[in-house]
Length: 273
Length: 275
Image 1 (cartoon, rainbow over the protein chains, first blue to last red):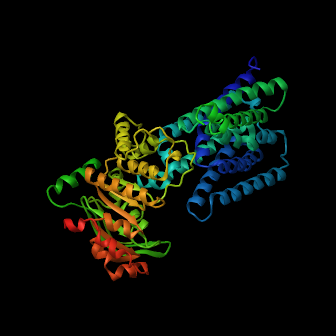
Image 2 (cartoon, each protein chain N blue to C red):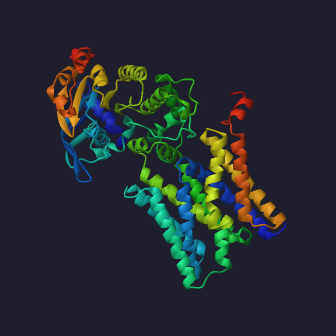
Image 3 (tube, rainbow over the protein chains, first blue to last red):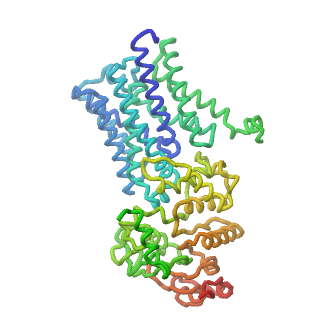
């Protein structure tokens, strides 16, 4: 597949997305934001629908929509009026319903819409790859520059606040970074499956080590190998790339569960039991 | 004047005299329309161990949050090292804080060293990374609380008492002058409580710290505090542990009898004796 331009673009774009997702996946897992990720990604359907109906690039409208939903989740839950999961439940279903209604009224149920739901990495253009690289660079820069504040915040928000960490900024920053990562990843695996990329790499890392640096490295390896293997397998067997990537990732996770040092037989094997 | 000068000037300016590190005067705090603190006035002198007691829901944690500048009083004045709460937000690295309970996932992938390093966050500064100085300060903090050898151990694998000591090291590994502790011994068994308190008093003396220790356990504080404040929304008492323990107002604040405390009060350490 690398002999073709679309294959090269898919691989480069996929790797960029894998790196970004694996990094943010660490925070998704330790801060228990998996449901937030699902909420934001499904809400993206509303944004995609606006783009399709209005004739604007759906990724742009989905981006705006996701950032708004992420901000809404953060604002409503931090105000303490509703729990985070309730806010997500409300916003995610409402945004999807809005999207369904919009495409139905505009008779826009078409192949284009399906590609956003299930991903279409083989249709990536170089412009898509460059914008994915730019947005990923922004997300990674934020995560690297504010890593110590983010780590303190996700571990112990109260003491972080008492230590002068700008917790509101890092919390909203993390949500916006998640929203941006989701939008960038929609082309790879689609709205339905994108939350897998946000959750499984970090969860895989956490099975194998109790050191955050190790979790991030394993998360990175899991995401990158799943994208590479998924793309080659989908090309070889002519099966959907997004679903293949997610299933490879799932297989890696199951392997990590089996090889986790916390399992009694592994502990015995490693001489700790 | 640069920000760094504020604390240095405070300590230089009152050299030789008794420094008042924290001063609250007529403080009233309302949260969500309810008055949680009313007419609170006390001061914390340098190197003093002040125990704040009161029943559950008395406003003790809110009091610490007022000192930290996280809750603004609707009436009264607050001065910490001569600064208003607004000025203090740039100087929080001079205050070590230990919350009542750190609720974290036992499999959270951080080591003791990583957790103590979190205490250096405000010293390192935004957009900066830890240096050798920070790593040395963290190692020193870990050594002070007796956790050397456990630096690389995941925090979730430590016992309750060891975790509390790690959180104490986190509060100490900055440029700490004031230590604010919110029920730090909650959840520990008696020997672990005793061990923690002895370590705390030793470090307080060694580092010249001023401490506010919040607890609902009058017994513990009566043994270790120089002075005690009893609050239940409003101030009921302020004095030496013996005075507080012998007072009828303590029963009034807790709305229960304290007969069993009389003996403990007699054993009180003695800040009272220092005089």
